Image (cartoon, rainbow, N blue to C red):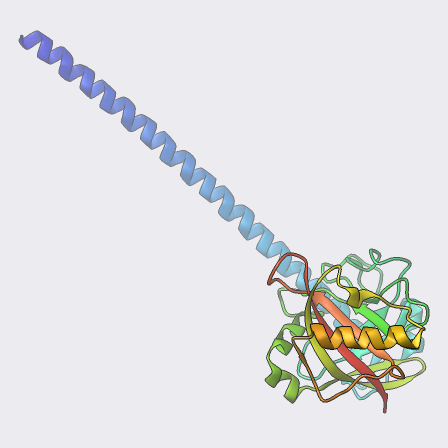
Length: 258
């Protein structure tokens, strides 16, 4: 009996050693995988942060070129901006936010998704008017797109308008174009899908204009005391939202000359 017990014990020890080796190997693989994930995440975070810094530097330099006075007062040097990019159609400013950027209009709606105003690659892209627009800021409604960046740049601050109190303290943006200076008086804030009918533009028929206004009012998260009319020029400012797939925040404002 004793030899058999010895053999049985040896087998059990071998199995335990084998199981221990397998366990150690599995632990090593898990640790290696976690290390790789941490390294990749760290690299991506570094790269993203670097990209944000580069984009900020680009737009800081553009702002200095556009506003030699170093702060927004409504005076924009469009002649200097055109030398950098002839696609310039306006300048948008919103107090107490990151929004202090040029607005361009490209050949299509893909051109400026990852292209800065100066033509270099940028994670932030540019603010741009819908490429199908006939007469930017001179027709019934003009749609302007901008990214919702994680560092708060571009149109990310529109998320703050979900709170009506933020609107109350910040009821207007400023739009400067080569043709004039305008207050953008906020009329409504919406959260809509990317295929929303609010993206319909180049509207000329009065009945269709009124239908558009009625649609905005019916879909809005809230409206303000700024009432839209068919005689207004509206600006639709659009950015990504993340409440559901392909969600969009929309700020609807009417143009009022300074």
